[in-house]
Image 1 (cartoon, one colour):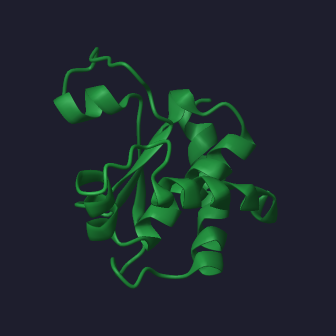
Image 2 (cartoon, rainbow, N blue to C red):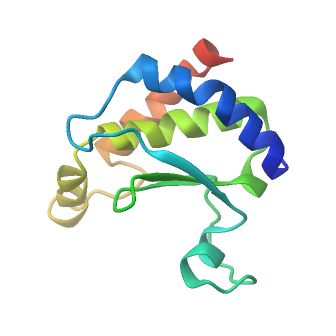
Length: 128
């Protein structure tokens, strides 16, 4: 999807998502949403940078930002699910998330916090 299409949907549904799920007890203020064409280009500063996978979004805890990589968004449903997923990460304890990866050996596909965020995506119809 185009950046403006994604941005319009986010501006419409994000306030409702925030109100529905509430604020994090770990992070304070709700995250801002920002947009970029590619995670690798954003992180490296090299416009043509590429990598092995291209996520649709990420929650950057350090800056309290949900990054939307708009070329990866395929539909209205996709953007709503993506925002819910990343907002769920905002609600979670970042230290515990890291500990489960580092000390318990969880990977993305079996990490309880990722599974919770994936499960939350099924709420997308509430905001459609």
